[in-house]
Image 1 (cartoon, chains in turn orange, brown):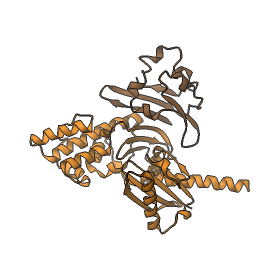
Image 2 (tube, each protein chain N blue to C red; image 1 turned 135 degrees about the vertical axis):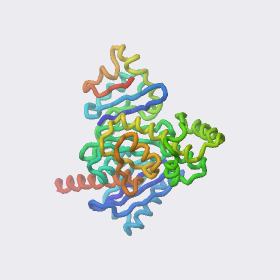
Image 3 (cartoon, helix red, strand yellow; image 1 turned 30 degrees about the horizontal axis):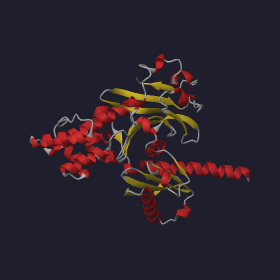
Image 4 (cartoon, rainbow over the protein chains, first blue to last red; image 1 turned 90 degrees about the horizontal axis):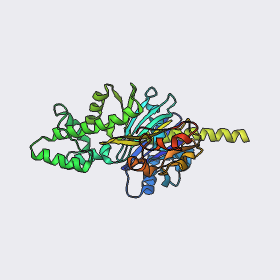
Length: 268
Length: 91
């Protein structure tokens, strides 16, 4: 059985094709202003990679902010359930999931079947999300992919960034730079501030030993390392942390299709 | 599933927790809340469950008066009408 999961996030669109128990193909693109167009493009890309057609997909599930505008999806499921499902596929023993994307941050606890038992989401403001890192990286003229490594060059926690708001944090950063503080010290402070904010969310759902980080922030070792230190546990990160939600959607699709097929065969 | 709606900010922790295993989707909390912050929605497993409206979750400390401070003194509130005892507040 082949299913498709499409995750339209605030910053990127992701699609995963899932066959039986393995990932057949995946793709990530930036979300444009038109979510429906993003959904179509990312789907086309992933189908091309797998050499398949849309008609070959037995079930299609959409998730993420833009999940309701995907016209070819059979069902839309919240990103919380999908992330738990996807994370459970990669690390079946893990029970705590942190997903940090461009615009929000979710802490999820799941059971042994990958079903959500606890969740909390911060989508109130960008200060607790990946976007704040993007803004800092742009502002300091450091590529986003390198900012984590650079922040680790600083000794200790870097300079304290106390503002809860990204806009104010930026002014704080300006004053540090004018005082002659190095880029790595400032970045260390930004990563530290984000890590401590996220710890609050994780404490809310309860942290268990095995935990997973998904979403774009998992690619930032500056935040990951600091979070590991704070929680005193190692984080599990899969080979492509941004596709976890789309993968979960595809797995949901498989389960729903199996349920549907079973019902069909019973009525026949 | 315990769904925690809300946030912590500089002034404190503002979370409303709905235990969906205890919620039967009756909708009494919708009318009991003076600020109308609850709604009954279809969840990912197609069951009807109470939830905090999205637009209120982001400004919960301004929308909900808080259970300890205000609504616990009222005769009916979201806690008292809920037979399954599914709703709790952090403030």
